[in-house]
Length: 84
Image (cartoon, rainbow, N blue to C red; front, side):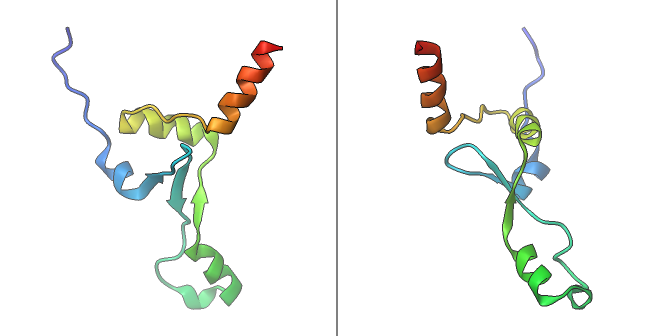
């Protein structure tokens, strides 16, 4: 039996949020300071969150220590495909 306890990555936990359907949401880079260098449209886009790709989603799952479930729609599609 392992004597090392798992600890979630606190730095990642502060920077990302897991949505209800299991996607990893994070902030875009470049929106903290020196905003005058960007045009207003780019600054507005930087305010919005961004969803991480699936490869990052799997890494976040391991680092945070819990299983991120697939969206229900995908589960239903896969169940239908296996039933056929």
